Length: 99
Image (cartoon, rainbow, N blue to C red):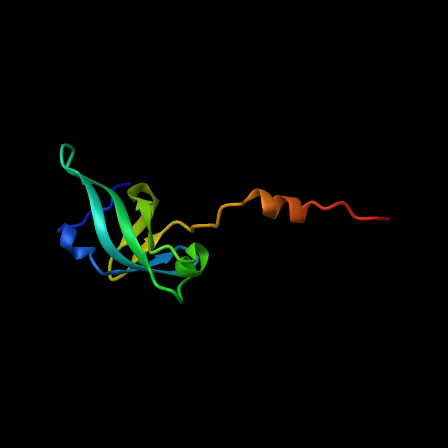
């Protein structure tokens, strides 16, 4: 299902939330495919106190592929973003227990 936006400028500085209600930040920029007249991705600036800001740490933001966008209206709703699992996370979760 395509999401229709009358003007690309409508998305700038809109609040971005995940479909689970977590606040991510604001749209700072967009990447467009001018040959196909399609939006490729949204650049979201993470605010420090937001879900995305806590997940990214000192990074400034995230590029979200446009297929992850669920809705655009007064706010933008994207599919939930989870932190990647690292090898450290796996090794601490699977420690053998002594019986």
